[in-house]
Image 1 (tube, each protein chain N blue to C red):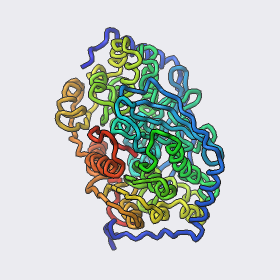
Image 2: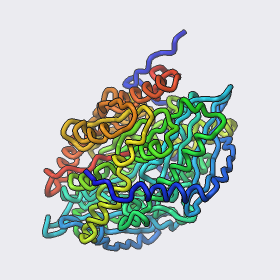
Image 3: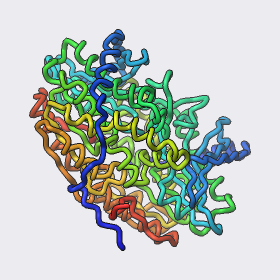
Image 4: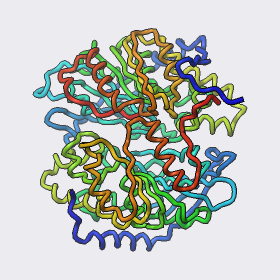
Length: 324
Length: 297
């Protein structure tokens, strides 16, 4: 009998929410709140322009790991403060971008480099491939435990900046950046005003790995090919990190966009995480698009969505295309 | 359009000579985690100029060789993926990391942003002199591998694929997309997107060096290399009137030594991935395979 055709829009995820999911993350947020943020900023004249100042930033996160990032802020002569804040969260293999084009629109924009990314990898460096399966049998040491918190901690950095309007902070990214958009909007629902998540990764981990042989999910297939006896432990760990389980915690408006031929983050899992959101939300789906998630057309939609909720000073400027 | 630098041929001959002075001394180590029931995957180490030990993933299908093969030149960024699962079923795959990228970042780790302008004031000090050498070394390794069918040997990537195909003419096919160094001094005037913006950043701080930078970049501009290409080339072409569009690429297309076909990019990744895959499969005598499976497992 022929295998059935895929119908992503009708997919029902089997991901379970552990009973202590909320406690697990509350405890981690409480733990990191005890660690001094110790924010540092160094102006980078070479990357700054007439309109935008660029800073290399650092702050301290879970396990006292020092996290790097880029902070791009409009010059006062170009646009006066206060500015809406915007976290730009990175994809799996891409290095954090300098979000200068977003700053030109009027955002105080932070390009986050969670642990393991270049400049944040002195004390933790699982590599690529490697990050997705590092300590995957143990939720208390799994790679994304600290990684998710590092992105949340960028919100704390934003809240230290007097030029940012603390009532207007958004988050945006694609692929792993889409995942971090969801987890950050959920874990920091106290501070996030809106989020735009493209091709969300880290949603339905095991279902995704079953639907594709593309990396990074192929790392899970490879790991379980070598260690099939660990599957149950892997499943148990991943439920604590699954975007589907964060989605109902989001309170702010969300834009989700997916490619209907995405071999990297299967569209089924995009629908599932969108369906799990109970906030104000909108979904854009793109026929024949893969992991690009229709970015060629979607960027204008993303800019308009963020501008509607965050009201930057110069929305007529165009942003650099977001890559995952 | 960049002017062909005086002495460019001697410059690159010097790189070839320097490379020839270092034996590659390949080491292959099987990676059980990445190997499957249909292929073995190895981490390969090679010596390039410097001397510097570079690396790459080599995947060899099970069965009777020789096999058609594809070399993937390194992307601009710190990470290159393990070769695609479907590709590993059909081809010998070799994905190179140039010096400074993840897994080849000892003793030197590249910065992003930063790589594009490292040593850019002179072609002799420019990092891409060494990175091109890394690609040439990788090509020599793959071209001489006993499992590779020399008549079905492709190279895919950006400018580095074109330059490598030009200087190591044994490749039968080339696919090039997303060119960075082609007309880069013109590109920079139309873009503030990274990595092109790295050149703008550099020249804002060093406005007196524009001429030197232009001369350095001209040494890497594929237009001065592609007349030596003998392979059949597929060029991905973007939108009319834009950087990367047909008018923009026409001079390059005209300069390529071998036969050239165009693929007009649709910006729909599923469609574009499948079209490029089908072209390569047809040229190399394999069945096309979409990365996106259309039925449930």
